[in-house]
Image (cartoon, rainbow, N blue to C red; front, side, top):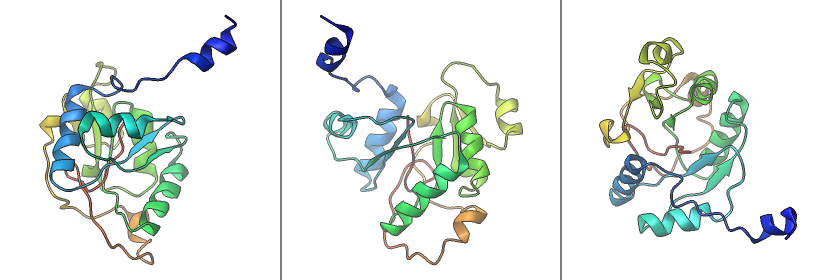
Length: 177
C-alpha cells in the first residue's frame, strides 16, 4: 500500500491526547454547568466528538491557529465575545504559547496556567516570562469561579456584549492541547 493511501486509511484517535488530570478538570467544569473549548495548533477533525464521548458531555468548539502569535489569541477572543462567550485563561504545557497569550493583553496574569508536563521549564523561568500559575497537575488549580479582571486588550473590547459565562480553574472558558 502506498503511503498516501495508508495515510487516508488511518483514523486519528484522540482518546489519549489529554493527560488524566486535564480530563478530570474538564469533567469537573462540565459538571459545574460550564463550558470548555479546545484551541489546537492544527485542525483536529473528530476531536470534539471523541472528547465529548470520553467526558460524557458535549464540549465547545475546537479552534486552531498559530498559538505562538498574540494576534491569533485576539482573533479567537473577538470571535468568542461576538458569540456571547467570555474567555478568562489559557492553559498550556508550552511556554511560547503562554508568552503569546500574555502579549495579546487578553488575560490577567493569574489567567495563564503553565502545566509542567516534562520539566522543560523551571518555575522561576516561567514566572520571569510573566506566567504566574505554575502547576504539575491541573487538579492543583481546582475550580474557582472567575474572580479577577481581564487583560488590557480584553477590557477594550467591551463594545461586544457578554451574555454568557462558562468555566474552568480560575476561569470561565479555557484552551487545552
